[in-house]
Image (cartoon, rainbow, N blue to C red):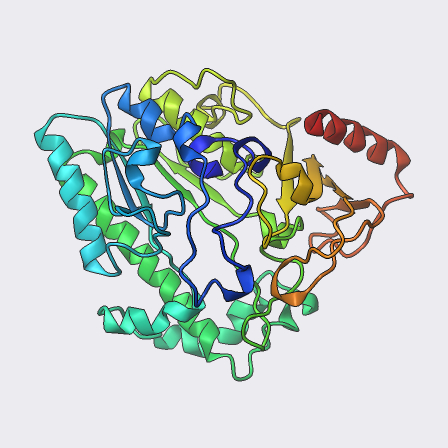
Length: 379
């Protein structure tokens, strides 16, 4: 919902995937919870600029038309994970849409969101013609697990007997292959140079050995294992290749795409920023702060999201502050972590990237500065 509206969960009201207990969602068929119909969603705003748009794959907001998409795969309003499927079929539906837009001489927006990677999808990969785990991944599993991880995370992902992890990396390769075919099609149609591509990933879980449980500082948590992921923007005609450590947010996607398309922004201001001037080298965001919030994953309150708020966090430069809120009898997912009030948490993300050393009480000026920013954000 945030990716398609450019708004925080406390603004759009959606804090859970669907109307079902999270622990049972892999078995049940949850009903969508959505406020997309009353939002100025990205496809609707692009439509006013003459764009055709296509929704493919993972989509939890009901029928595609509710968000303003002109075409899509989510027809009946149920949660859509992998329509129109995996493999070349899903790619072909997208390339057919691109070709249709070209015939009609219309600009286009493509939402391509296959549910990849995911542990329980490996068997579907094989049935759909995907590759089995490449030998080089099997042979280098220990290297993969050690890359960027410390003992805290390795206790949840021990190399011994974890063939599912190599399957997971195979799914990542499969997703990469899908994207490569889409890019090749754009190149074949002489569209690549003037097409903005944005890649944004969810974090997923650091899984434990027992099915249905996960490490506590991953998806659903305010720690970097749960909220930090890379963002890729590519537009050959406008953006020179570069790597940046600047703080950006998934909320920046909507204003950046709208600016690239020459479309009008929503009537109500959105909190993200247009990153094009930054990527073109025209301005700097070195002093920027970014904010976030986490909510109970098994309780929904669309009209009052604050009732299920668990934590607020802010990052400015190297420091991160997390403030907790008392939500008794509400737990964050399968590991039953209680979301009771705790002390503020202050971390130096440069020297302590795994957020193990709470500096609260040791850096009072840093704490007060970040707290003031967070209180201004929370209103």
